[in-house]
Image 1 (cartoon, rainbow, N blue to C red):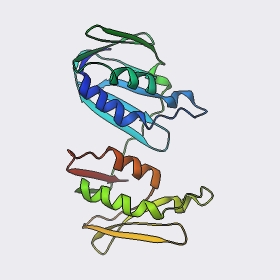
Image 2: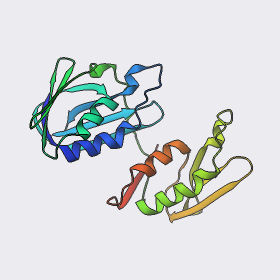
Image 3: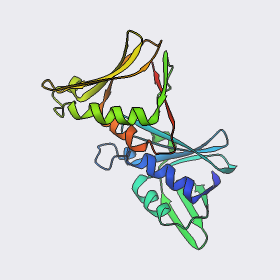
Image 4: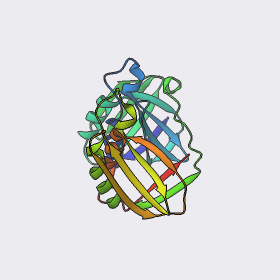
Length: 215
């Protein structure tokens, strides 16, 4: 693989997904992120087996390829690079990073070792304001339980009822519920509160709408 990408775009992608990668895991591959070329773009992926984060970056693709690399190591290095073009080249299981006078070689692991990200076959689709979703997440996750022995209470229920979308959470003592938007879709899904908090974190001011797919 050989690609050229701007430092700003690559740094933004790494910052968005690297928090998902876990350094405390019995599966060392989960502390890595997967970088690969896909549809003339660079794709950056991280997962902890509960949540997966996929970020596409516009890039000049010279050669196709893929590799997994330590999330923290590559994020810290790219974050310190000047705002210029960054060359990424995969040589076997090594990633060569160069930009201006900066050079680094990072040892990686073949992409085949990385967990497969499930493909969603949606039966329902919701499009809503990013600001609204972020606000409702903050208002509902606070009443979700932190007791892992009662996993059903550690999530937020997203569901449709009587033509509206709702989000609700309870820890058995407190209850929060918000009605969001009108919808003709029929869906119900229990989403871990930690997952929603991560979604809220990556919703930046330049994101106007969010699409939610339910299968």
